[in-house]
Length: 163
Image (tube, rainbow, N blue to C red; front, side, top):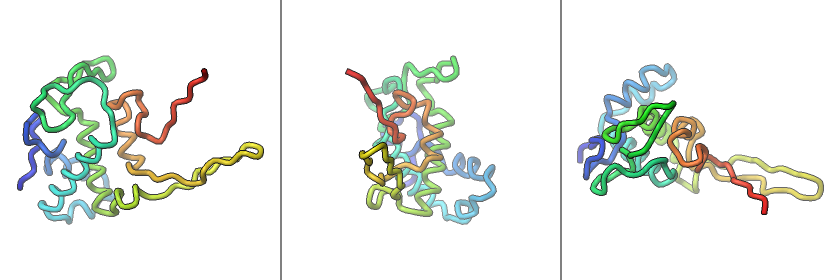
């Protein structure tokens, strides 16, 4: 089934088209693997990346329509003081989908919840768990940072409250 990147579409399954992903990757010299990948595989990975982005992030604003298949477009979103159209998908999210699709081509980030990162910390006699799973590549999380609630939701941060 062909990829559908219609913003707000009831059958949309990707935030960006293959042409948009190709344009994103053409500005990055290290992504030769993307350029040599066939269109069907690119579509498959763009769809997969989009599903994972929506599964891992809680975005700012509200869905623009009850009929839309994906979390974007959204109403009530402002970036850098400018309202984001409720009929479009922000370039940051298109870039995140393209980047994540490329990363998924290279490695299955969903296998075992992603690669393990050693982040053990010791303070006096207390030691935290030395590893955590990272389901979203850092480059992708950085691209969507301003589109998610709290600005860092889902990026490995923990909110601490005193009470």
